[in-house]
Length: 394
Image: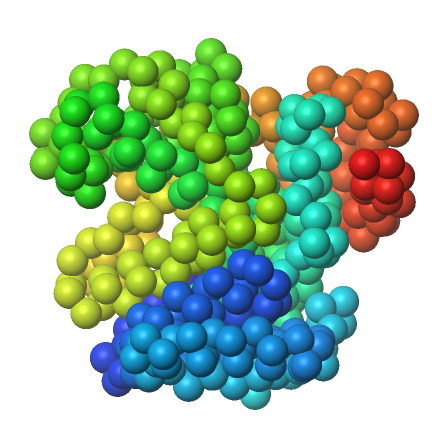
């Protein structure tokens, strides 16, 4: 695939020509919410193609979105269906990409649908990294298909991008440009919390810059604390930096949320936010900041700027407030707590602590290292020995 700036250049041309095609791969709850948000944007420049295996299911989800949006007079979006695409078959994915030539591909697929992995892992091992081989399973196929199709699309990944994207990059494979969710779910909580602390009603005037891995999205959201890790964070109100103790902010982030598929409103919104930032950067010429796990192939989650730099539309890690190494250090600590020690030379390294917890909680011995070539075998091992027996019991 071409580098990101070259693909952003193509994207810029299509935005200016009012012809942007977005491909959503996987129309479960995340994909359906995202489709709803895109259709409701009422932007005639945007068209969508939804890709999956089950045409009847996709038609059903599409019809409710289209009708509901038109009731609100918010539907100027053309949507096509590409069915019979098997995400285990790289060639069928590549055929769909070649046929539609999307500007943006959003991977909202899951290797094991209908289950929130964290419902098993948080209470038992207090870490999410165990699921990385499952999270990467379809993502690697989609990226291989992008290469086979010579795609120039920008790619957004939704499944544990903190580790999945750098794993692909470390293995020398094509990798998504942005990750959605995780860190991006925490930013709004912090904005609400800071507004509460400051006693102001206009929480939309709160600006937050933060670097953190997936563990802290969960830990702060569930428990209101950061497990002793000093996370790089700046909070501003109407452009003025505010000195608010992080523990005060984090304690206010523990708010009641649903635990079922309704939570995927957030992940879909995170995808929509990245798409909107890309389009807005072109239309306004102004820099847009997003928070993204795995952004540009980096381990953990980072603030990212989308804007004009080095002669054209570009994307880069925002080091305005924190230098890159400081953010890397914080992310490494966060990801370690999530059970991922490092990703190096195409290998995922679990922490010793996670291995011990898995042995105690599930009676399962995971390998210390998972090579890229062992992804499928390890993912199936996790399904057979952890997901299947422990979801049956519950």
